Image (cartoon, rainbow, N blue to C red; front, side, top):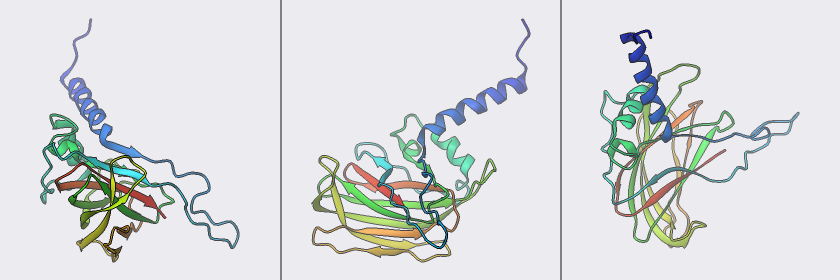
Length: 211
């Protein structure tokens, strides 16, 4: 039997950790007709809300990414190296943005009394294997009393948006009074959205919908 060479073992190890990291990357089908124009008629995407990130308060939350950590392969390596998907870097989530999503609407649902801080990063991988992430903004949510369609989860009625390095302004509504808070960002052709939940006192989920 032939001995395994060192280069072969290195490649095998690399593929192994990439496979583990991909468990935290979500792909949503874009649908054939979403956002497509037919003749002179512009059609708007009407897909359902998706869960972009799900975080448990009992777990160790991740600290925000440092200057040398904001690349796709670096984040994949950090996710793979985490002791579990619910520990520190293991809670980072990356979602592939369908090509028909020109912008993303965000909402948050959480258990009663939620106060949640989430960092939103956008990147463009294209046909490559690595890309940088730009910090588009920080979303701070406060949970209201309107029940969502998910049992025991309530919708946030407040959101405070802090814009960072993204060449497009955020839109947001923060109505309080147990209504529905929302934030929206034009992705400007980005094909990856990364969510880093840095603070939460309750179980929570970040919802996203492409338009």
